Length: 248
Image 1 (cartoon, rainbow, N blue to C red):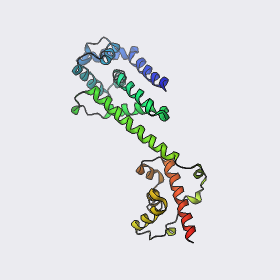
Image 2 (tube, rainbow, N blue to C red):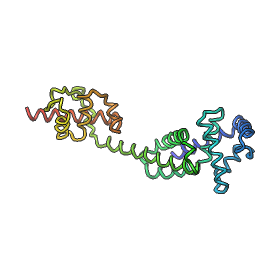
Image 3 (cartoon, helix red, strand yellow):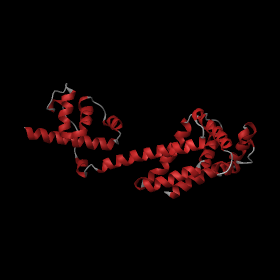
Image 4 (spheres, rainbow, N blue to C red):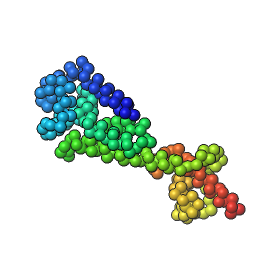
């Protein structure tokens, strides 16, 4: 995982130090005073990553880079690489922290940080930001934490599903509303009856059987993976059939 993270850093270094990138940077420096004082991309990155330096000046540079990305300018790719490398110390700190806390999701961590950072840069409203660099890093840290927490919760839910449920056939995946021991027109009565048998999975049964929703849609609504929704629905149908069998 550390190798993947370092490879990502190396790829950005190569992209911003190529001959084309250096020429592009010098050309932009002629029209953008925020970049004019730097001889090349390396000097800019060194300035952004040092602990010293005027924070206001750094914020102005970050604003120029973000605006280039958001406007999809001709040098947006170069601006993206400079943003990554300028903020790398903060992003690397996030990576190290989450690497310890989410061991079981290491294979997704690099992709998660990349997605969140890219999305944050594309959506950030600079008009309401005082410290650009700090805001970007803090927002990424928060969103990565939330994303990984949701993933870990989903994985925990999946682990609660027993292996034998994978063998349930199609005949257990359907339930005619006429089989329900309640008036299908009275959703409250149906919900109460189903909850007494399948608990929280009553929502899945009602959504699929009575409302005709796709299990993928229901999974999105419940915040779980489609595979988990399918297995939980199969388990609920089996419990209902077992319950109806006991009553007959």
